[in-house]
Image (cartoon, rainbow, N blue to C red; front, side, top):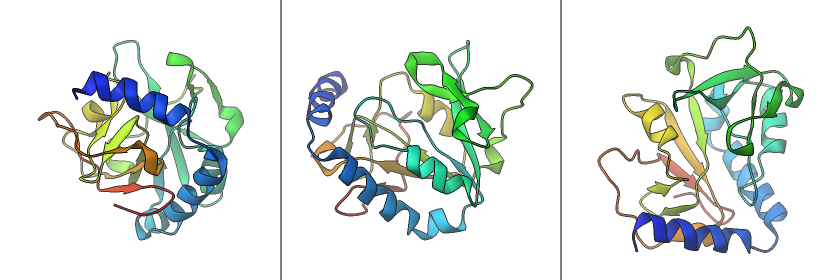
Amino acid sequence: MNKEELRKRYKIIRDNINNRDKKSSEIIKRLINTKEYQKSKVIALYSNISSEVETKELIKISLESKKVVLPKINKDNTMDFYEINCLKDLEVGAFNIKEPKVKNKKPIKKEEIDLIIIPGICFDKNRNRIGYGKGYYDKYLSNTNIKKIGLCYEEQITKEIKSDKTDIRLDYLITEIKIY
């Protein structure tokens, strides 16, 4: 299957996963127990949409001990990350996703981010991912050494994703069952 077919198929699969809340909690517990999470000082998270792994509790937990940054899509189709101090610092932005309110704020420099948590529609065990097709994360992460962790449900894992040279492979992939 090509990326577009995988995207369509796995979006339906993800939308129909049972016990997403319970599975999300397990995924977040696994993430929080990783040494990458524990030693990070600045963490880039995302505000989940629809049937993605739920991140609201992860954001709250992370705010207690870390500098938390979330992405904002710019008018020029690039992405920057901005610090938040609480969930009220978010507003609905591009693609109906909650983004940081950025008035009078400067984006965080890439070099400051220790760990980035990345959503997706489907993944493979080699830690390749398919997102929504705009390439925001791939563009942002090119030429960086930021540790990259994807979060997904086990049902979102496909046999193989043919990656392009512009696709950025994750360092880890965490599901409710294991870490790849």
